[in-house]
Length: 249
Image (cartoon, rainbow, N blue to C red; front, side, top):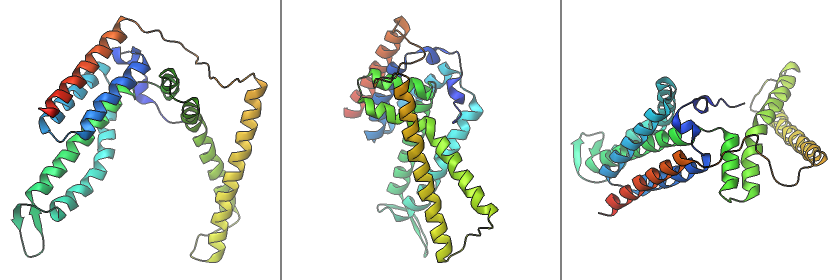
């Protein structure tokens, strides 16, 4: 199963209703994604850092997530300043660096890191199961919620099935190469994985029907909104509204 390291905690954010956190994250991430104002992004970054402080998340784990995200941003820094048009700040016979390319790279970097930190602070502090039930509580389509929950539960089972078939092929001395035999073997491997996944899904559905499944997943724990949830929702929406106001002014 996927590790939920950030969901294991006792901070205030860990006890906030997942529905509230989804709503606040939706508005904060939305304004961060559409704005090109560095002031708005800087304030949003400050908000995300405050949320991380409140959540009391391990700095090392957060840094690892940021490194993973910025590994993709690194390639933008290698290409955008060199290919994006505009005023040149440095030029040689081989390449030139534009001012607008640097600004755009910095903007994307700040927005990416701010969004990642916001999602970690608000959504990663809840389990996938609680987020799935929270989406259902927000009146999202039930099938979409089921898709999230069952994908999280069984994608690892499917991966284990694929690894088992792959090991079986290697035990039969299968050596990948660029020939028809390899292509056919790989196609059979993925085909068998698909067939076994379909059969497992059918058995799971039958087992759920035998246990009285009526189209609604009952959560193991229930959470009623309290004063902390309402205050957090008000503060989150106020911060989002302030960022929207700054964006348009």
